[in-house]
Amino acid sequence: MVDHEEEQPYAAQTKQMGRPRRSKQALLDAAAAVFVTSGVDAPVREIAAKAGVGMGTIYRHFPTRPELVVAVYRHQVEACADAGPRLLAESPTAEAALRAWVALFVDFLVTKHGLADALHGEHSGSDALHTYFVDRLVPVCGSLLDAARAATEHGALPTDAYNVLKGVGNLCIGAAADQRYKAAQLVQLFITGVLASEAP
Image (tube, rainbow, N blue to C red; front, side, top):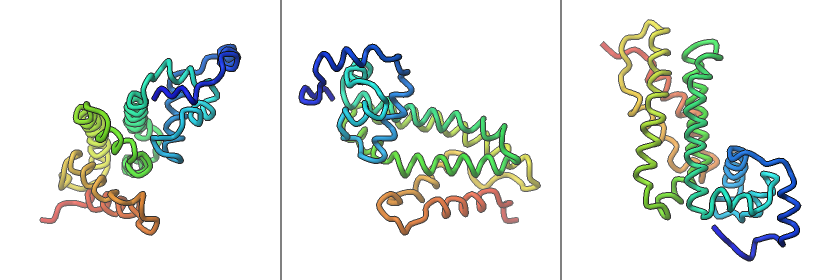
């Protein structure tokens, strides 16, 4: 990620250091937003401008672009995971919480798809990150499914959390490249089927 052509003059960097220090999370939020609009190869200066910091700050936290991409990916997974318990506590019903969380998950898959592509292409630990993704999100989905099932008169759900997430992921394939394809709507129909009682 180090690009000497993008580095600011020393005086400009010194001026930036006088500003209140932004958190690492703010940098990751800014990078995630830029990646959505400009892709994972967006110039570092664009991320720095979005975060309101100098480029030197970005480089201190993330010396290479793959490190930044991995950090943003993990940051987004954590945000998705943390949303599960919050939605369950705040939503009027467990089913509403499940549907809201699945909508967030769809947004993650569709808008952040470039992150996964970049990791598979550049990062030797992509398999470990996929395992992290599964291990972090499957239990969250499972707790939401269990809560939705307990709040209804339905019997056992016809599938488990892993297969629900896998099914959602398959429904999202290609959605970012086709504006006519309404993955979010199809996913909600899928959830309706998941929550339906099993056929006798």
